[in-house]
Image (cartoon, rainbow, N blue to C red; front, side):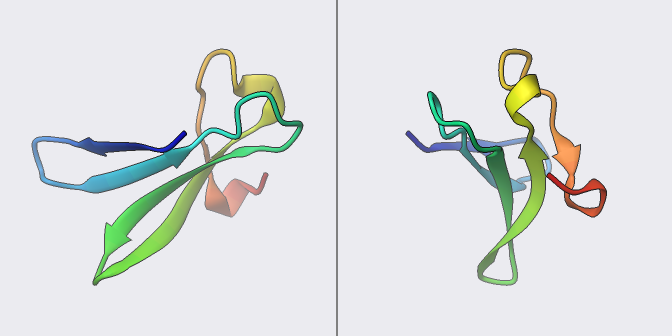
Length: 58
């Protein structure tokens, strides 16, 4: 499953949740024609959807 979401500033984001898998979900943002990884959803945070910034690691 992939979810693409727009906000009022026209940021295009893509969520890959890896539902049912024991690995972190991934959040990407479209920048300069490429998908850039901007966050993870740790396995323990999947139920709440809490996103951890890439700089903080998976």
